[in-house]
Each structure stands twice: as C-alpha cells, then as structure tokens.
Length: 394
Image 1 (tube, one colour):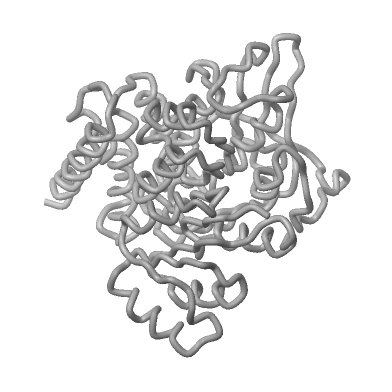
Image 2: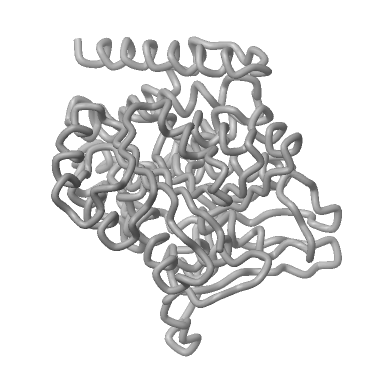
C-alpha cells in the first residue's frame, strides 16, 4: 500500500481524492490530511480515513480541532499546526505520494519540500509551479521525484504523450499542445457588460465545481493563463507552441498535435476524479467512480480562439511567461490580491486585469534562480498590487 498525504484535504480536489481512495482501500492508506479553516469537514474525513497526522494550518482553529478529537474514536491522531507543519507531513518517511491541492502561493513550500524529498507529487496546485518554475522542475529532476499533473488539461496532455513519457522533457514528435478551456460563465457576455459582474455570477462556473478563487480565475481565464505557464514547464514547450482553444462542452480536455499530422485528444465527462484516479494508478489505471462518457449524448463539439479583449488576463499570462524570470511570480501574486479584492467587493470584475497589468509594469524580469528571490518578488508584488487597488479606490 502507498502512503498518501493530502495537502488541502477539505477542498474540492481533496474531497474527490478521498472518494477515489475509498474505492481502493487495498492500494492507498491516508497518512496525513491538512486543512486551513474547515475543521468540521476535516473531522469527518478523520472519522472515515483515520490518518496518522493532521495539520490545521490556521493556528486559531487548531485548539478547537483538538477538542473535537478528544472524545472521538480518532483521538490518537497527531495534530500539528502552522505552515512548517505542512512541509513536515509532506516529507514523512511513510508518505509515498503527496496530493498538492492547497490553492494559491500557500502551497509552494510544502509542495517544493515534497519534490526535494523525492515523493510522487500529484500536482493540483498550479501556483507552486508558476511561482518557482525552473527551481521546482530542477528539484524534481535532482531528487528523482515523479511529477504527475492533476489539472484536467495537463493530465489530458500527459495521457496523450508517448509511452514512457515523463514530465519536464520535450516529446520530440509533439509539434503543438492544444490547451482547452470552457470559456467560463462570460464566454458570450457582451464585453461592455463585464464591468458590472458580481462575485456570485463569477463563481457560477457552467461545467466544473471549484472553489471561489479558482472559479473567478476561470471567469477571467487567468486560470488558463496559469495553466499555459504550467504547461510550458511540465512539457518543456515554448508558449508559441501552445494554443489555447475554447471548447465550451468540456468533453475534450486537451490535445497534442504530432509531426505526422495526428492529433491525440483525451475525452471524458467533466469530473476531477478521472485525472485524480489516472495519476494515483499511474502507470496503470483503476476505477474512478466517474460515469462513462456516452458519446451519443455529445451532439456537437465547438472550438474557437479566445478573444483577448474579453480575456485580457490570458494575454498577461502569455506576456509573463515570455518575459520569464520573476514575472510569472508577479503575475500570480497580483492575481491573488486582485481576486480577493473582487470577492470582497472592493473592486470590479474588470479591475482584476487592470490591477495585474499595473503591478507587472512596476517590475522587470529579473532572474528567478533562487527561492529567496521568488518569495521576495511574491511579497513585493502583493504590496504593489495593494497599492494599485488603493489608487483605484481613491
């Protein structure tokens, strides 16, 4: 049996992962679960899966969680707290695989620690790779870790690569990646109406069940921009060789175009348990619990190029990866600050791209060859993004 640590257990990816685990109790055992604030959800997971360790990242919630455990059947669980504890459980000797599902920059350090420890990393946290780029991929290579993408698009690309392919290498026969996107809830909304979009409208994704931050990223297509940067790193491809394609049905999850004219596509119902199960069973496959795709229900499949006037965040992501250095880190940090301000109704939906672009304009693409440089750029970009927001509000 493989020991599993889930970073971000109470989020949608964590919940789906535990659903897959429950279907294969002979192959995986849960060693560690982590959560930030949702201690009720974490407690229910502990009752079912009885991990050895739990990390409650929000220290003010840790004592309350310990009280819940005290008189329960799982009172023997080791409860840790704080950011350093996330790195601790991600590198435990009894952990073979780490599901990296903490949203945002908070997932960087524990995921990077898992990479340095040579774990099999099931990467759902795209920000960790976007921020640290070559540092992360170098850690994977030097430690002998396996890096398996969980995002449905990158997982699809991985499945369409040649047999024996490993992330971080360029498949010589692959000419181009076609990275699909649903287009989110505002794919057809008149551009002039986007100014008045509310947070409730932005988080109402038409196809996927995601958290609020990721749902907003999908609505702006920043999610696809971050995935573009991630794809460049995972598959060692130039951004000029990655084409974003809007495919509103979300049946094809991405494609690889080969030099002989073949285009391989991975298809399936939009359910995150499919890529999760594929990565967990790799290099084999096992049941995910996902309803089989009924091809006769697929009446048509549409494809279109994204409108960068409607989705300026995607343009900014292309600019960041082409500039290189710290710019992807700056892009990600500014986006996190801008989305948080939008969700708290401090700025408008259309201000998100404005905040990111003005923040990026404040920086030059300095080299990002150390973690200290990356973390400094992240902090400074957040400060600058807040300054931009204050300027918009004044």
